[in-house]
Image (cartoon, rainbow, N blue to C red; front, top):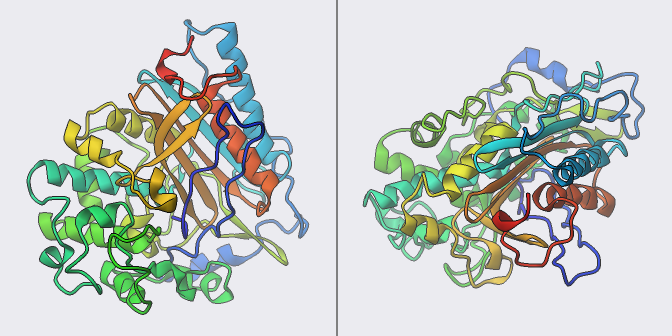
Length: 437
């Protein structure tokens, strides 16, 4: 999850140069739980041999050797697209913007491209695995929003129900805040991640604060230390607290944990074997790239922390293949009724919220509009996007290391647009599903 994760600004066909996404702190968002003395070893610089500057992330790492490729129906043009996508991934790791980068594309339900560049671990130089898991940050929100919208479809609640009726007195203005306003960030509720306890650069967080447990009410109580940003419905401002409250609503209506509901309603039915919504466990399962923070003394490993700091606003773990499968099912109409899916894609009338719906963001590219969500959490940045008809999906993750600059943002932008649009020029607004194979 990010303090205000935004999708990258992608050029339309009428623009002459890509605009880069604004830089956001990778966290100032969620943070921490459950101290274990053995975990503190992760605070040591990741590799003594690495200089205090950028690590040689791309050295010796294969760019295409472990990649998944399209099958017999592939064409020379498509081979060019995948080669360009490989090169775009390498454009993240070779210059040292990130230690690893992963990407995947699914078309008509079939995984047609998947690759990884860079290294999974600086100390060993082990290559990044395209099948690896990673923290998805705020890309958790579409899973949670979908779960709540399923409850709406079951008539367990209405999008215009007042928060006060569901969670009496939970936050200021609760009698004026609707469920819809929580989902689309027009509630005005303060973002708990503005609190310094969630600044992952602070020595206190690195030294143990990251293993602290937070309950959902704890996070709401922190948010209440800060005044509302605006009266409900009067503006748009990204607030992770909104999705903490959504998680609490899910728990109130179902009597089960928000993560249990996401698992039983989405993860298990779709067979997302690499996806989980953890509670307190600081570990990542299976093969995964480690996340790093650049300190003055060199790389600091921030892979391990208690995800309860993020909860339903950003605790999820997944893989590129699973994220594309999820979007394929969601946008293909297999998780929600038409009315709820349409509501999910209804954006707000306010500022940056004009591309934000109910847990989905819209990205307009030279080859059409896509829906998905960005995600950022210490050590990891995620993007997942799919065409509105559910025919084509992209998911990517990068362990950004030394990237608070326009060049790194432009490189990540290139990964996304190349994977979505290929290398051929395309008119703005083109239906991606109608593109020639």
